[in-house]
Length: 181
Length: 71
Image 1: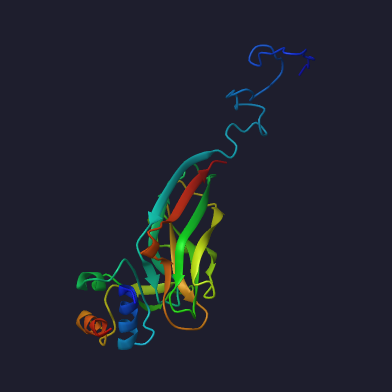
Image 2: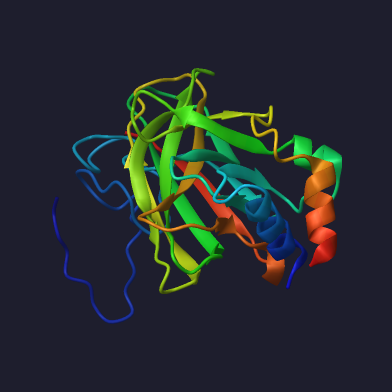
């Protein structure tokens, strides 16, 4: 591309007064070539879904149980990834002597849920938790992908753990973003 | 003591450390019947097998409510 030195207060029309490829400038939309290795839509977000949980969600189980908090997205291509984002507003360790673990599970095309990854823990010493985690998931499908959080107590002790405690009128949000290849 | 604190205290009085999960406040027998009771562990060793059918004969809605009313 040729470069021209501009004088003070001179402007150049990027749409008409350039040679070579200048794909995106000044609000342009020419992403079809010369952008990132010629990929037309690199890293674009295809769709976003989000579900909120506001009621008490609890367990006294030592093994992982379904929380019932589910978000579902159908990828437009098998190459798409799904960015899973969990924002926990008010987790709660009721007994004070048990931690809580939270895992991401997926169900593809209506199949049974299976574990993806451990999202994290809320520790008993904290008692109440405000936090979360995210995970970039590659389901390699164009079937509906349902993501559900599973929860359980962790480590020795007794009592109950709350994935969400409604006491403070807050929302725990589970968000899925389709990241196009 | 909150309502759910009473629920847990009464539940564990009837059966210590029984494993169950659910959502919302357990205000009615219908809510109670919607709880998920842990009845086993799946082959992966970490996922619970649950049932809507309460497997614990010592825990009923009537007994649970009576214990809660004592608190």
